[in-house]
Image (cartoon, rainbow over all chains, first blue to last red):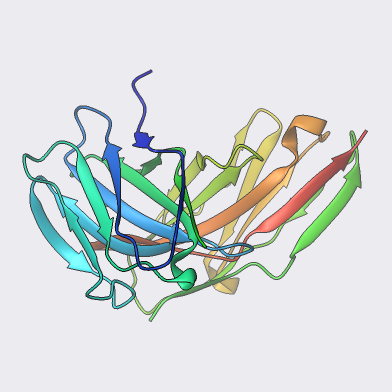
Length: 114
Length: 114
């Protein structure tokens, strides 16, 4: 499978715990995006990387959230001190650098905070 | 600011009927890109089409067709001879030139009744 992969697919945690998600983009893609999707809504942009540089962060991304892409390949999204409001599907997408090139999405990580 | 509106929250049609999903967008940019994605029950967003603002030609791909009208800021999606496998949530999305993050609508849940 050469598509975008995400791990884990599901995560259940207790409020106050830290969680980390991983995204592996399509191998030749140098742009990587994180979105969050809550029930009944469309995905909302969180942040994106071009290679290892984080180029934009949404105001949705509070200081409890941090994302990295250390070698310009896979990326991690960490949420510290989780809250029940963090429960959502976290989606990763990747694309080539060309302007507005199509973003291809992974299967997502569904987070449930108890 | 940019915005995508999908006014139809849910649509149900009987198999083999044609169905049109509406998408209306708002943007101040003259160069922008429009997308449709399909989200089946498995949750993964599947890319269907990308259109740039300079290309108003309608497009047909098998049973799928798209009608882009800049005059009404609409990018509607029609499925001809619907099938049960078309049941999913469909999202319309917009990105602007130089800012590749996607702004999604709230989606339309399409149910095809056998």
